Length: 135
Image 1: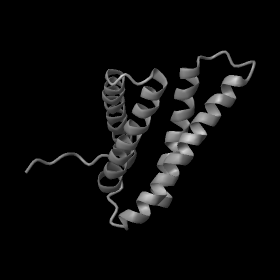
Image 2 (image 1 turned 90 degrees about the vertical axis):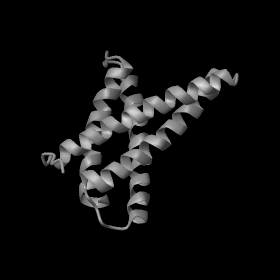
Image 3 (image 1 turned 60 degrees about the vertical axis):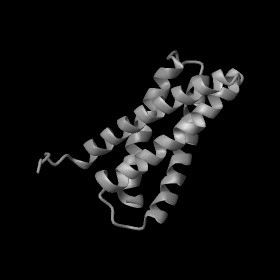
Image 4 (image 1 turned 120 degrees about the vertical axis):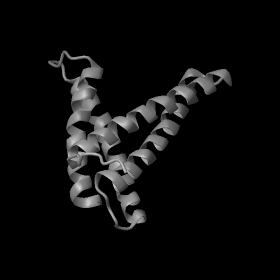
């Protein structure tokens, strides 16, 4: 049997997030393309694609984190509920912080740069919340 080197938990979580991002982008592309072919408006296509993609990528992220990153044996139902709460809080924090920082007159960074910075900080916070409170 193949033996893989033991990776630190933080590295596993980083790889899990990257994998989930790929799932998110792939589903976003597929659903958005389908919506356009079905002649949905651009706004509706983007919203549908975002919601569906985020649901699938979050499920993938939860499964990878539970069984691989944190190797949790606890109740999946309890963890899924807490993970969903974290997901919603993280999404709200990201949107709020990016909007707030972008509205500051002295900030001259592009929105995407601010989002990367905010989401990076939120990733570290999310890792700690998952480690100590969820899994």
